[in-house]
Image 1 (cartoon, rainbow, N blue to C red):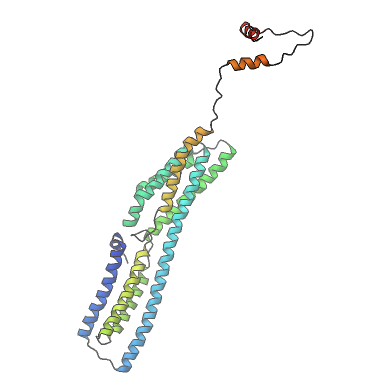
Image 2: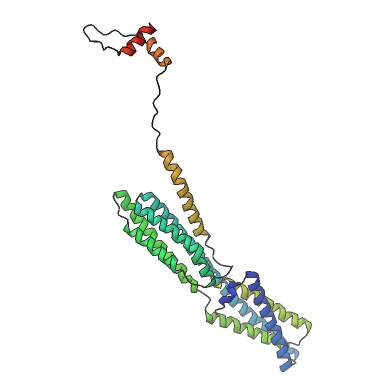
Length: 318
């Protein structure tokens, strides 16, 4: 069942439309049925009809519950796929930053451009058109190409390169899983069974006389089915509409990469030790030299003559 136009509406409008459409169709069909076939059941037949309604509505409720659990599991699976892709991207960013190579730095820039493109460009297309973005695919191909161009120059870099390629392959796997989930939806056969059992339950209710109580009963059942249909449709496609998987994990990785880039400049300048500055000689230094005790050299050892200026200063202090 493809009703993609509904996913472009706000959630409240989508739910209101589905509920009103279900209730209106049920009450309209009730009025037409009572006009065409104004049956009047015997008490025994009415009791049997109510029993059959209970059985069919129970089966229908189980089918709807199974459908809801199925689509909710698919929704959670898509959410975990996005989180795994973001985790692999974060680890890849740290490995590339620790590599210390121009090609690795270019690959890290390509990773940042890819993640930003997914958040800004590809996600809206996934929500509204259920399709991937060609530019995001091209950015990922460039990232993968740059990662394979890195040439290690030491044993440490060889180990890091293995981690880089492993994380890049993980990202490729999770990206493919995310894109394959775009077409994931509840099977048409299951939708058909749910709709047919719902129609059958209404037909049995239509056999009851058109009293206010029976009209309220039909309305309540239609309202319940409408809300259940809204929930199943809202999460049937994990990346479509407002009730969908958000790109927040990927956006958080982009913000972390930007913060690390801003901190790397000041941190690098703080790590460089400052050179010692030369200090001019003062009178206090001369006084300290003059007050130092003089050690006479042993006999037979030559003494070193001080320069004239320093000798004059020494004579003045004496």
